[in-house]
Length: 78
Image (cartoon, rainbow, N blue to C red):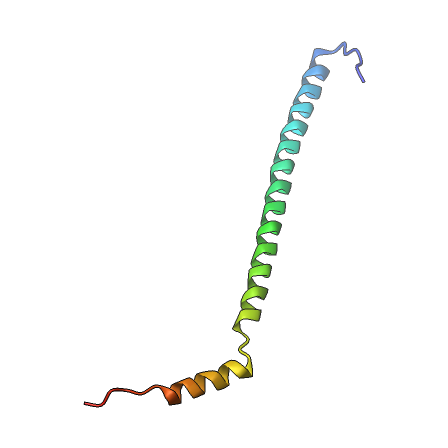
């Protein structure tokens, strides 16, 4: 929408407001991009956490195997 501005002071005010709006839009875009990037990082951390949680659960068979292995290891006598 283009309109004719007769008063230079009004044109100056409109230009200043437009410039402020443009700067605000740039800042908002950067902020939104940053929030989205942090969200991706959080998703990645949650995924890694769940992988570690599953990996840290030791099955009873592994515990029995470790106990048997510990009993079967012979140390050389001096």
